[in-house]
Length: 228
Ligand code: C5P
Image (cartoon, rainbow, N blue to C red; front, side, top):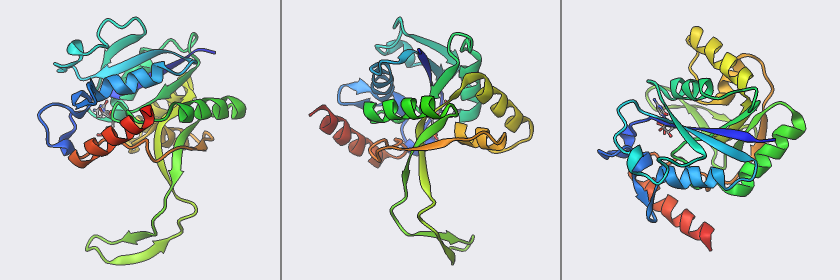
């Protein structure tokens, strides 16, 4: 029943406009990465976390996660997908047949959402991801910024993480997609490429990915609100 979570944390966070990679910025007294990993480890079924860090990482050893008994680290790659693959290679899929992949930059994921994802994936036996339906009217535009059309909103979801799949199948899917130069921005897109079914599990929009400086204040607000 035990699960392992892979946390890609090897990005540089260019859009954050900060010298320190965003996963190491402080929020309410802890780094973003510590919040994220603590939350994953607070889930009963998650036994171990593999954190994928940059080979040039100069910050991890100063966090409270260094020497944590339930955490290991591996070196990441050029793109997020390369880092996820490095994490998968470090997982013993006989011991952990299923993995969750969760972005380091999403510290506000509610624990109940992770539990909902785990139970839905176990129920369906396939795999899936947290997501929420888009709220705004959606437009397709051309390169010059002219509206081409209004896209039907009911069918559109924001893809979040965690995403949960059978470890060995996810690894094969990613390797195949990379071999054919298919752009892979999340696990679900690799599984789509090999025609594997995924379930969309409704999650909270509080599970934002910290990307730009404004997101920090929002994430801090959400974290404090969640403690109340
Ligand atoms: O850049 P973006 O916010 O999309 O990155 C999502 C997650 O993937 C972040 O937690 C980031 O640290 C991680 N990442 C990675 N290896 C890369 C690029 C991004 O682990 N080469």
